Length: 59
Image 1 (tube, rainbow, N blue to C red):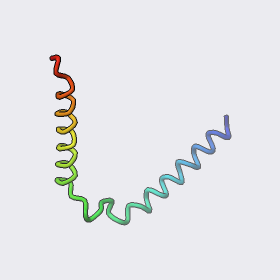
Image 2: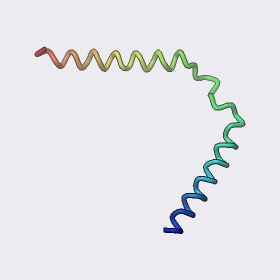
Image 3: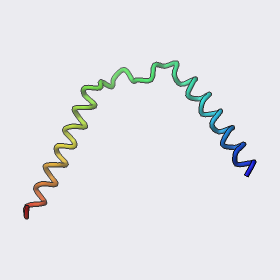
Image 4: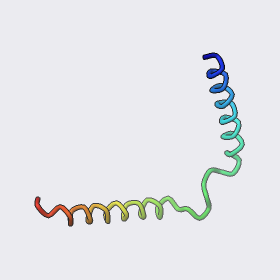
């Protein structure tokens, strides 16, 4: 039981170190616009909703 706690602790410490190093780049990609990403997700969900309603004609 002690070994598993130690490995969880060391893994958590490594992840914290990795996250601290990864924050230097700003965290967002220059080509990804939130509006385009959100609009694309919205259109994909609307398409799935439309497909679902076409197959459920008994209502």
